Amino acid sequence: MHTPPPASNGPALGAEQLVFLNPRLGYAATTGGAGHVPKTGWHRPSEPGRIQLTTDGGRSWRTLWSGRRVVFDSIVFHGPQDGVASANVIEPGVRDYGPEPPARPLVLATRDAGATWHRVRPPFTHLLAQIQPVSASLWFAVSEPPSYVEGAFPALRRTTDRGRSWRSLPLPRRPQTVRFATRKLGFAGATGSSCPKLSQLWRTNDGGRTWRPIPGTCGPRYVNIDVVTRHLVFAAQSYGPEDIARGRNNRILRTRGSGRTWELVPSDPKRRWPALSQVAFADAKHGWAVSSEYDQGFIFDALHVTSDGGRTWRERPFPALPTAFVGARYAWAGADGVWRTGDRGHSWTVSTRPRRLGAYELDFATRRAVAVETLGTAWSRNRGRTWSFRRPVSPREAARAMGETAYLDVHDLDSAAPFISADHGRTWHRLQLPRSALGIGDVAFTDAKHGLLASGQGDFGRVPVFATADGGASWRRVKMPPAVGRDFEANLGPGVIVVPSALDPPHVNLAALSVDGGSHWQTFPLKADFWDCDAARPSPSTVWVSCSQSVSRGASVHFVSHDGGRSWRKLVVPVQLDEHVAVVGEHEAWAIGNRYGRSPGTIWHTDDDGRAWHQVWVDISARARYFAMERSPRMG
Image (cartoon, rainbow, N blue to C red; front, top):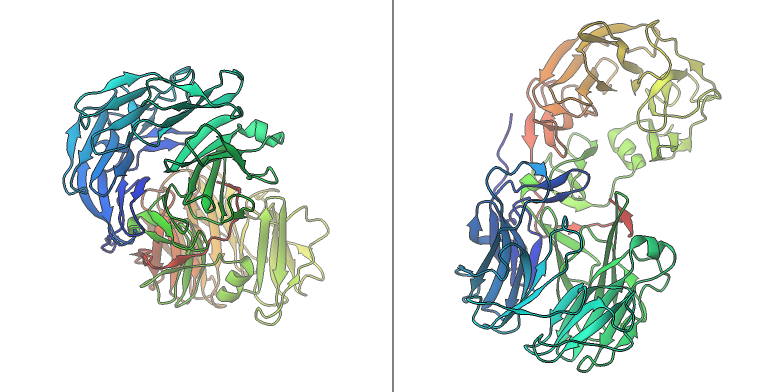
């Protein structure tokens, strides 16, 4: 039974372009969900692009402007009244996934703090651009060549009449990044004149008409220039992932005058940061360093802060890399919501709509509490009515909460260890494995002595399966039905073994099931497909078997028995629920599922043996603190 998500003042989808004028007042320009998806291609927007306003630091948002097929690329303000937003308008008929569409630029401007927005002439007809207003009427624009055009470099234009007309300006050869501090003073990272194989900082003192190289600034590629004041400017340099792996580190430069001389800011002391992408300083001492690189299909990110001008840097955990900063304490990041910190990255809170809080994995569930993996670890202590963030759930904590006697601690696919408790979870010891077991994929015990263990590598259980009656001191190999071969998938519950593909006649899978540790076997049909199954036993008489298609999208199948497996009720659920159903009572269970079989899904709950499932939405308070436990660089 699908339910509408709770009402929310969270930001619209794709609030990735952020600008804040003070700790409370900020703007977001959204993408509508468009963007590049690794290994898939460019994804078109699924909702209108919007310009939104917050007056409470990002807790709540309201829409000022929206447009269909509009994908915003930047938003920036000069003072409290004058702002400019740049976007791409996607042509009708663009496929859901595919190559990046050609640019159809749209530029909007406001003179009244965002109350109204009007179109102005784009600086480039077929290129998107980052616009930098240095006064209410004087703007510079730096083009963004599309990624699919090789050998293209940014170009520079200027307007003195709020975008009614634009004039082209020169740039140094092969420019990388450009930033203006005043209407006359600007800096650019480009190919060096005295070091043509490296990059060098260039300076203009006449509004971009002429550029001169700055001695002593040769080095790696310039990726960002941060203007704190006209007399305090920082520049970030970074090598590529391969060069960083060889020990070449990132560099941050600083000028305290007019930009003729620059000094090196200590950074990346152990040469372990990923590639620098942004620096943001509040003054000469307090600053942020953001690192992010995409290397061979993996994403590595890092966030560091300094309060002594770079002499020492402290790594900060983060739920998403920030892109907007105010002073030394405040930062914001847009990713499935808007994250914010007011204590230099020690803690984070998020403003998001419940529909964006998809559920990836069910950590544990009891009659009252449920914990799920979403943007972080979210949990509810009142059956899903209110939610907050908490620290990640360990396998031991989940086992203790669910009242399980044994659990499998999976570190990676090659390292999984089973643990067992004889005192209801107060103490645990490592379970001794059968000598012939090459690995372990699943474990389930009915009490401290009687249990099952399946082979595997920590992902899921496989045949052979072993049984013990003395807490693991000795094991016997469970005899399987004749049609079950070695390495068949075998999923376990307390005293329960499920083999989803025991036989494979035409048009049907015939799964094998035992509820007495393999002494006797039953079979049940599943349509011809790849299936994953799981079993739960909240009491000796009640058994749940849940099966879900692992490749195709489709309905889930559940079998429930209240007489120890002598008779069963079969239930077909139109929502594709994950096979790992948390059964918390004779008739009650929690699961993660999605009507369309996509990940992430939402939470579902039943209290009538699965005949009716009700959708439960995660609705995180905008004041809930997020516990970011992972340390950067992290792999995403």
